[in-house]
Length: 281
Ligand code: SF4
Ligand code: SF4
Image (cartoon, rainbow, N blue to C red):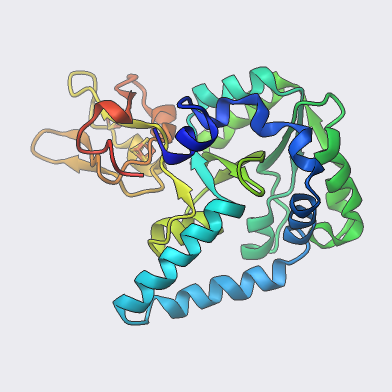
């Protein structure tokens, strides 16, 4: 279990606790202000990411100190975790409102509207989170086109997530002042700022999943389809065996590699049951 499961999930998966999605948490004025400011400060976030590139050239001791600070601060305010589709379906099982919005990261990195983010609420009408997003007016991602909130049924949402997997996007839950979970994003390393920060710059702002992938060599035909999807460089190909091999120290447990496997050769194990990965978050 990751530390959030212990702190915010009473020893169970924290992102499966309905209380962490509740409107009650949005009664906190500080949290509400954080959300409003988050979506209207793309320029500042862009500069911040530029500074991370500079940090990569700094001495190791400086990088280590800054990384600890960023991770500790992010855990309090805006932190994520990779979640496989089975657990996404469980989340969709108890939330009452799923709203698709433009991705903030792609707005910054691609200057494009890409609807890869899903706001979640326990209220059928989107609750206070919907009010906040609606209240952002034209400042939200820079234009009125983004304001048409798109409500999805649970089935529409899960179908969309399966399509995102085939695009190579992994699912991640996000807090807005921990432990409040505002939604789920669909990320890749090229365009998602949190993945860049975590994987490229080695400054964790999201946990790995509670799972880890494993290849059944008897089923693997060596087609290499799974390798195309892994955002974390965790899959290699054994030329001698003509099979895919997963590096358990690199696997984030997103499970999206399964979506292109023609023989169902990949399954997820519990991270806690795999000694090489149990303590890797
Ligand atoms: S090998 Fe691990 S990190 Fe890579 S796609 Fe599969 S589950 Fe995700
Ligand atoms: S997609 Fe499946 S069959 Fe193809 S290499 Fe990967 S694990 Fe093996």
